[in-house]
Image (cartoon, rainbow, N blue to C red; front, top):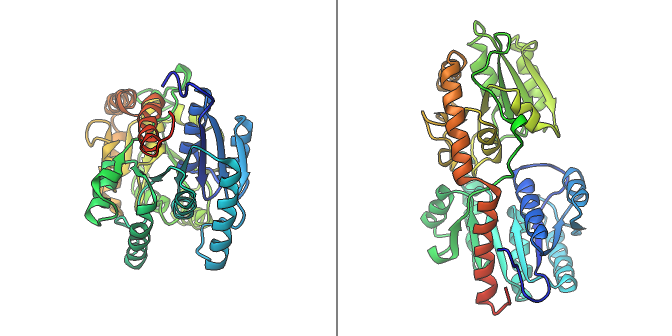
Length: 383
């Protein structure tokens, strides 16, 4: 990948639904865009809104364009207008490849690019028909993804679990599907955690996640309510519609002095560096980037065993897994690690090693580039 193109630079267009929030999909797109722009590509990121993500994109010197009428909610008239607007934008930009991310952008982006005969790749950041999502919604999304799949030249899943799920429900044939794990940039040594170290006897726990139905901060609070006799503090990083309810629950459980709601932060790496345990309670996932960030920092991870999580967290080796929604299992996992500095240190070291072997940015860029190259070459492009 040292030479992207012999003549001129390849133009990659990334499309994602929202730019007013910082989630795993947004940070994944930003890492790809930065990586390929640094390697000589021309990159444009398109989204249906502006905000914290678009500010990061522009600060990185990457071109950003807002797509009219692109929104997460289904709205047939606006969606048709968005499709037409997106086609006009792509006709003007003339990218060599369109990489679509998130459900709505993935649907409309695939259709627009296919109609213009532009090579198009869709990345599924966890399927919306996975276990943990209410059945009627899962059924509808299965139908929608099966209809949209033929418009993509290739579909990337971020875990083997999601690839197998797509095959089980016949979303696309095997040759259209491929798993490419997330990769994230490394951190300097001073941002490595020391999970086995003593911090005045207090064990610091941290969860980084949006307060939404997908995540379950309330379960963590209920689990910790049964561990009042142990020396711990919890930081909850993130924002979202369920935050007020969780704050109220913390007060009801009399945990307010030990649980800190930090909101959306730009110093997550620094917060991880001073922590001892990373915890993530989820109802469903793809493969959470926050888990990889914790492993990169050298933290042991306690996480719900949903979707592709076990492909990052090896139970008993890099962390501990518990059944979705099971407060007793989560409490047991937390108790074990709070009481064992040596186990925290060993699991953190193993997690760091797994990050270095499997989840680096260079690995992701190389593997994703192989997908792009195959798709462009198949359509007669010059890579």
